[in-house]
Length: 156
Length: 185
Image (cartoon, rainbow over all chains, first blue to last red; front, side, top):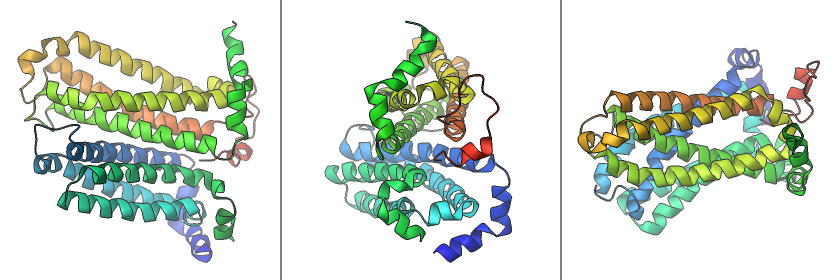
C-alpha cells in the first residue's frame, strides 16, 4: 500500500489538491455535511424500527421518505472520500483507522440490509451504533497514533 | 473573576490537563462531537425540509417536530458537552481563534432564528400544520437555519485547521506552515 500511496501523492490531481490549502478542509466540511444528511435519514429509519419515531407511518413509508437521502448522501460521501484519498494518500491509506472504518462501513451496510428485510429492535439499535462507530473511526484517521504500534506498522 | 483570565484558568484545570496528557481522550471527544453534530444537523434538515414543503409533506408538522426534536436536543447536549471539553483543553487558543468566535456567533444566530420561529409561525401552527409547507415566516426560518448550520459545520472544520496550542494573543509572527504540521486534522 505504501508504494501506491506514494505514487498517488505524485499524480497531477493529488498535487493540484495539495497545492491549495483550502481544498482539503472544504472537502472535509462537505463530507461532514453529507454525514449529517446520512445520519438524519438513517437515524429516522432505525428509530422507526425501534418504535421511537415515525410511529404513525409504516416502515415502507419511512424508508420511502429517507431511503433516497441515504443513497444521495452515500454518493456525496464516496466522492468527497475519494477526493480526500487522492489529496492526502498516505494520511488515509496508511491509517489503521481508515481500514477499520472501511470494514465497519461494510458491516453497517450488511446490518442495514438485514434490518430492512427482517426488522428487529435490537438489530436497529446495533445498526445505529455501527454508524456511530464509522463516524468515530473517520475522525480518528486524524489521530491514527491512538493505535500505537499497529499504526506505525502500517506506515512502514 | 476577570473574564480574560478565564481561558488560562480553565486550561490549567485538572480536567484540561488530564485530557491534554491522554493519548486518546481528545481524539475520542472530538469524534463524539462529530456524532453529536451529525445528529443535530441531520434532524434539523428533516424539520427544515418539512417547513419548506420539500419532504415529509403528508405528515403534520407538529407530529414531525415531536418525533424529531427530542433527538436534536439530546444530540445538541452531546455536542455542547464534548465542545466544552475541547474548549477547556486548549481554552486560550480557542478563545482567540477567529473561526471559533464566528462559530459561536453563528450558534447564537441559530438560537435567535429558532426563537423567531417560536414567536411567529409556530404560534399559528394549528392553521398550517397539515399544509404542504409552512407560511412565509416559517420558510424564511428554514432557509436561514439550513444556511446557518452549513456555515457552522464549515467553521467547525476551520477551527480544527487553524487551531494551535502555541498561538497567543497579539503574536501574529508565527510560521503557519510549521504549525500546520503539528495539528492533527
